Image 1 (cartoon, rainbow, N blue to C red):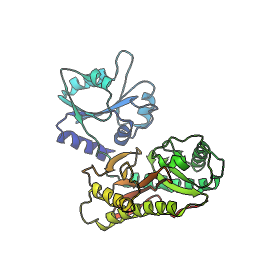
Image 2: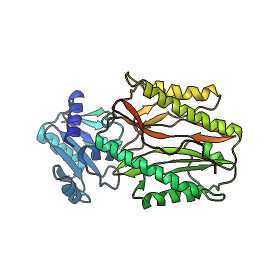
Image 3: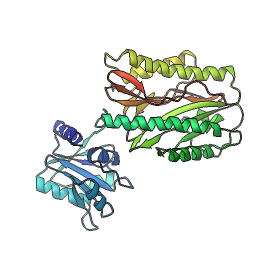
Image 4: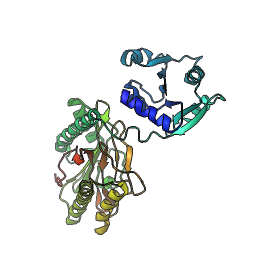
Length: 359
């Protein structure tokens, strides 16, 4: 945690702010280790050159003092809310500029903080958690291993007449049985629904000759996995097999490009283009989303592997590669895995089979 505080204070120095107000639950946990807020914005972390303050209500102060004894825990009340606490610290430490999370702080909270004594400065913390330490990578790897288990145990329940919602519930139960939690709402898509990239799981029943798309992740020690697999229930046509194999080839091409360019800067937009080119060559619809994204404390975080992103892949970055093609006439296919760049090697963390499974 001290290294993470030092990193944040470096950002403060670089962006010329005297302190930083952290409002996102993920970043509060990352910096302080406190992860017991039940609702977003139930607490705030104020980091200055001198101290680190956790500002929260009586609902959490006892837990905060117990689990983060090194923090200065400040308790709000109906008369003294978090903004007044921040202003008091501003006066005590003679702070002139306070940074805030431009992607997270609410408008009402911003207005509450307005004060003639201090300037509020919007600062991006997008790259704060970009490069993972060994403990983070180990937690994500464990989440991925458990994800592979859930996928394997789910396949036998794919039978004619079962609903998407029933499979989703079964996946949740299996995860709990092996000591994990579902990390985000699972996508279970049968048949025509598989051609909707972010389909909302429904009561649709499984019928013969249908793609089944499963997109889900587990949480282990606060860290997430994210995997997609597409299987076929019935007898796929030659075109459907080609559709599947082309998506598989697309992902392999992207991973191969990364592995073959480890000695140089890897632009994420170049990786995305490699994957798209494979689909375009076969004249299949190209996925209408980024090729991938970072995953750790949140299921979508930096980097974004997009044609429009200027980012580079850095050492100890964890991210997904998830090309897909979505054709309403044949169904949709997405194959997604979690990878990490570590010791100048590309390591795949989700390892369920990518051969087309026909049930």
